[in-house]
Image (cartoon, rainbow over all chains, first blue to last red; front, side, top):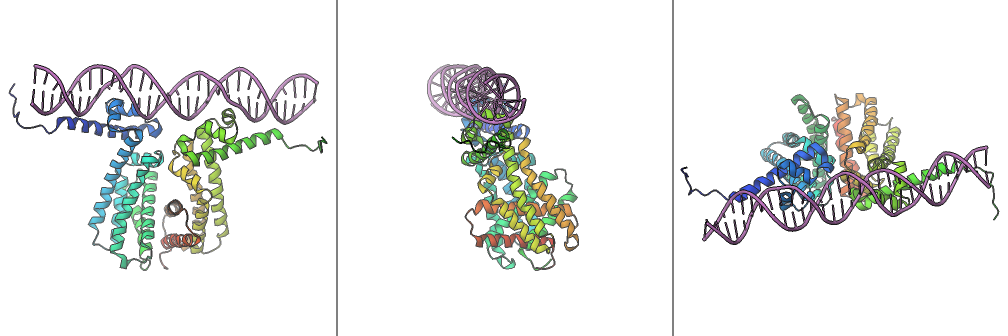
Length: 210
Length: 210
DNA sequence: AGACAATGCGAGCCATAGCTCACAAATTGA
DNA sequence: TCAATTTGTGAGCTATGGCTCGCATTGTCT
């Protein structure tokens, strides 16, 4: 056999292998969590689903908590990226439009993997490392707060932190509830939802105009 | 010893005894949940704390899930009673005042036992019988919806169900967040909070007036 | 008093799940 | 080629916690 191009170095094959293992474990964790729930998602089951042995699992994650926490982190990164992009795009637009885009982005974020997100919300205990489920909220808070700061003059609110908190919490809670209770919503339903939520928060920030 | 009044019948002493046992178990469950968290709250520990044996525990509750579910139900009953009373009082008042009272009642409800409520929210998995944690929301929904129906003409919303859902979810989420993040809030802080939330929801229902 | 029922007891069974460890296979570098 | 290193394996150890069951105590009724 002609061994073609032996000089081209494969870039760290071993690293590649282990990376794939880690990815497989995270993917399997997500699938098993969704299928069986948090309690029934044993590390043995997850490893089996990933096609690796438990031993390998514990080579990359010190315990079950850390494994799930890593998955949460990955999921939060994906969601947060959408929020970030949306707020970047509307930085220069008016408040009502910006709010609308933020609500839409939040909805999109929740549609990344609703089933998994629901498991996180309903079954994964927020304690220890898992408390970082909340990290998403904190980062979102920072993004929104930065935007509001920019537009401070246009909004009718004294305490910016309080307003940010109200905004972030409200939009998050409403979006979560909507995705859970209307899993089969059509585009039309989603538009209506976005309309209502936008009206709610925009009216709060700028009470003047209807 | 003079056995005084032997003729007066104790009303069903045995029933009384078992009722006390059940109460002790529920109280102990609450305390152990708050102290140790859901996972560490073993039935043995709870029985010990209640001063009864595990066997007695399983005489009144088929399993751990049912035990915690019973506690959740008791807690929800207490909270819901406050909401119910508040809405009954304001049935004839104007919308803004009614909203304010509802927000205040929701806050009071969350202050019944914040630590326990937090455990329910953060650690108790919403599955199986425990899903009834959500029952509180549904009943609150019904109460609010009935009120809004009464005042339909005054509010600027097409879909009453949607409005109710937005209202209930928003107030609940904001109140929850407030109680969690500001556990040592003063009356002054609470008033401010109630003001803001009232403005938010009242502005949503009646966009006309600021 | 005596019998029957209701309630309480708690050592221990059993299933499960997190995690370890001694070993094997793959990969790399020289 | 061959040792050294990285990566993978999975049977099984250990701890834990839900739950049972045979027995004891308390209470009731006649």
